[in-house]
Amino acid sequence: MKIAVAGGGVAGSYFSSIMNNEHEVTVFERQGSEEFRAICAWGTSKHEMRRLASNVGISFDEYIFHEGREMVVKLPGEKEFSIKLKGLCTFDKRRFILDMHAKLRVIYGFDVKRANIEGFDLVVDSTGFHRALLPRLKKDYYIPTVEYLVKYKDPPFDDFYLMPLTHLGGYLWYFPLSRGLAHVGVGDYFGRHRSALAEFMNKYPGEILDVVGKPVRIAPPHLCNPIVSERVVGIGESIGTVHPVIGEGIIPGMQSAEILAECVQSGLDGYAHKIFRAFSVFYDIFQFIRKVHNSTFSYLRDFKLLLSPFIYMKLREDRFGMEVKLRDWIKIVHAYRKGSLATA
Ligand SMILES: Cc1cc2nc3c(=O)[nH]c(=O)nc-3n(C[C@H](O)[C@H](O)[C@H](O)COP(=O)(O)OP(=O)(O)OC[C@H]3O[C@@H](n4cnc5c(N)ncnc54)[C@H](O)[C@@H]3O)c2cc1C
Image 1 (tube, rainbow, N blue to C red):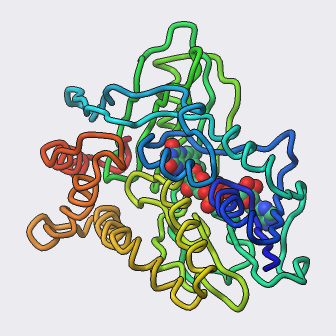
Image 2 (image 1 turned 90 degrees about the vertical axis):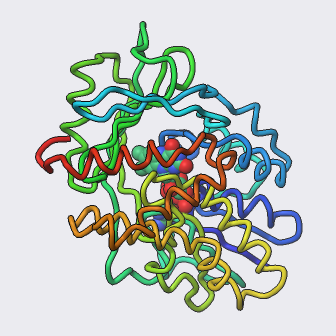
Image 3 (image 1 turned 180 degrees about the vertical axis):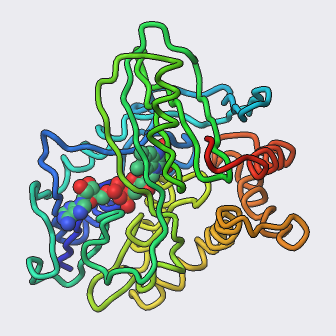
């Protein structure tokens, strides 16, 4: 098949790498090769990444910057507590993607639009939040973010640090990279991301080397329909494969690429169904977070929804790279339901 892949981010590049041996694949990437950016905090879990990367002949461990031991979580007005980590790490996502590109036919600086992509048997929309080729969503849900790359002479933390914001609108992250560098950022549904980051930087000043920001889609695949439209099929964030509470999109995006690759071999008919099944828990988690955002969440009535993010992660501790305890989860939800929206 002649396959066009629109968007050479992590999902599109991974899908292309799987398909490249048996099909004629062309990747169209809007950014140039030199200035290519992978906007993200670069946090992931090494266990699942090892498995996924090995499918395309990549040794994931060569990209790891920092392996976490524990993540400190700070709830305002309360003592910090820590979560034991078992595989959560940061990695060089940009180099990881560019190394996949190196074995692919990539056309850089190409802004794909519906009209300018013709003559392919299959067109994949992996343009992330932009969703450049699939039909526009009637109602989208996303979290605005801002992130700094910070150089510290004396880093304020030597491991992962997280500060959830009230109403579970989002959180501040401090993800160590290497040589005193860290990604420090905030995403918040209620738009407090810039002030929360400014406050953190006042407290823990460092040299800001780069500033990025873009929205993260939290609408799950069920609300991103259609995910297949004529000869265009979506993977990754374009179809909402992002954990609606923690904003993790790298592994789910690659998993959706893996599902599409299997379906291309066996026929595209079942693709949407397989995606909905694989990511059905994201729909439950999304229902939960919407209720918290709208202040309509009730412990009694919505107890099952409250448990869904916990159970999903508890059963997959290695996959998420951390120990997951109900006590910690309740602590986070409870502390933040009490807070006011004016404060982070
Ligand atoms: C600030 C921030 C921090 C995050 N941190 C984490 C994290 O630590 N861990 C984690 O798992 N997830 C994280 N995420 C989420 C994760 O980065 C994304 O969900 C994931 O990268 C999505 O992958 P993708 O390939 O689907 O889309 P993207 O990574 O967005 O890639 C899409 C690609 O398509 C290209 N493109 C867009 N439009 C066009 C067009 N019209 N024509 C051609 N090319 C186009 C873009 O240039 C880009 O290269 C974070 C997100 C943000 C914004």
